[in-house]
Image (cartoon, rainbow, N blue to C red; front, side):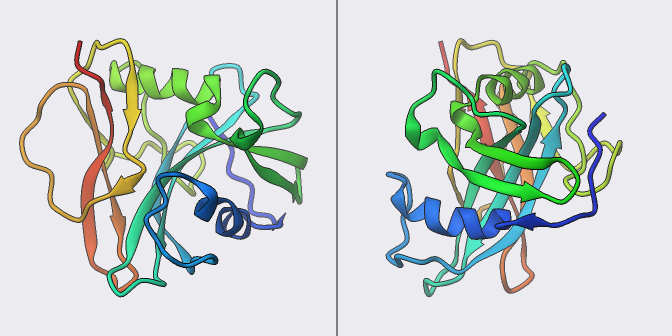
Length: 190
């Protein structure tokens, strides 16, 4: 099980994402510098214990109607080889673990393998900020058995209806305190 360290990161995850997010093709905001706040998420465990895996939801409050983004993150103790340069979100100094290379999880093979395992019902989602604690609010409707997993980067605010197979559903909180749930990822249909 992953251990959550109560320590500092410099720069913080939100600082790194503030610079990285506006450069992404799926960014729908119009601000060069979004005003990001943590809005939710969960973690998965790497069976090898080498990669930290977090599915972070951030809300951008710079627009009249805030936008929520899902950013899967892979935290590594060394640079990841054989991935595009834009996969690296940045590096940060972790108060306990030292330098961490933080990657866009969609381009990190360990993150995507564990997401696939979650959608097949093989792993248990973990609380975002409490060590060794399952997160029962994260649900998988399925399991799904398609060849590819699609991550929903821009989250909607509508309640999720139905239970079609292979969908990962979780919640977040809007900046005004309103709770929302949506589809974070799904198995692509065959």
